[in-house]
Amino acid sequence: MKIGIDIRALAAGKHSGVEEYIRGLLSELFRTCPEHEFILFFNAWGTVTPDLSFAERFQNVTLKRFRIPNKLLNFALWYLRYPKLDQLIGGVDVFFMPNMNFAAFSPSVRLIVTVHDLSFEWFPETFSSRQRLWHYAVNLRGLLRRADSIVAVSQSTADDVVARYRIPQDKVTVIHSGAGEVFRPLDRNSLSLLEVQKKYQLPYRFILSLGTLEPRKNLLSLLRAYEAFHQAALGELIKYDLVIAGPPGWKCEEFLEAVRKSPVRHHIHLLGFVDEADKPALYNLASVFVYPSFYEGFGFPPLEALKCGVPVIASHSASLPEVIGEAGVLIDPYRPDEIREALVQILSDKEFQSTLRDASITQSLKFTWSRSVEEVRYLLMGNPIRR
Image (cartoon, rainbow, N blue to C red; front, side, top):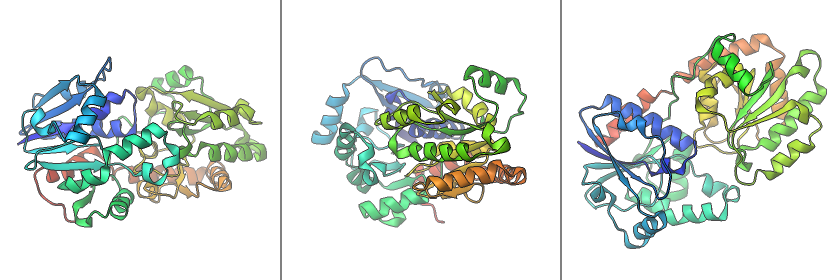
């Protein structure tokens, strides 16, 4: 079977949950399906040169690179419904879009689309006007109605798709994402941990949060919670600093200003962008991981933390309870006092920490790329998944 796959999302040049999904899922798909031919559609104008070696190393994968100006291609797809992407890459039996984008297809080609979240619908204020216009023009509702099958990365996202766009439930399949095998418990005294600790000048004990600095991640609530935690801390608890890793995002100025004015600013470490290779060590060095996001379609960082055996505090909103299960502490993202209480509960109780570490490993085993690929492959073959 010839399978077309849209990988334009990799042209963004920044590591995101969508990119993590594409690389993780497709690497496993190509590896486990040598009998099928995969044709990848990639378009990038300018000097964008993402690393596509994850795909190019497989003999059953053909990469079709185009250098069409994005605005021209998007306008043609939106207004003219041309070119048909399946025809542009030479004709395929089924076309898989692992993320929303401008698209047009021949009536006969089967289409499968993955939806990661509807944050642009529920929290439009956290997107720039340009981003909101892009999402509006792509017309996800129309794309999903054209699709033969829809993959939702969580039950929360599936429910959102059905409710917001009136898509039939039997058209939407929940297939959870996975996380790389590099995320696993490491010895505290291993050389890799010591090197990362030195590289980022990390304190010995710290509370970790990881993600783009943007309003939806709710880092202001984490900051307020940590301020209250540190100012009231007694004994060993006062030794924990706050480490936040992630690149600056849209509207991050308010948070950065709050950090500069914080009475405990000398105990707050902003690492900025962290190399992917350093993340497993970073999680392992942390005493607890906090993810107070208002909304996530799935949430890779909490899952990665679980796989590393780190106690997790996360919001009880959207998909995060699906990912965390009983292996962490869920809090109201609008209440910094709940975050503070969870920090005290975990960091002051060694036995509770141990219980969470064991539970996190067990919970994380439910989320693997091999399981995700098994179900995606079933859809690609035209077989509905019955739960």
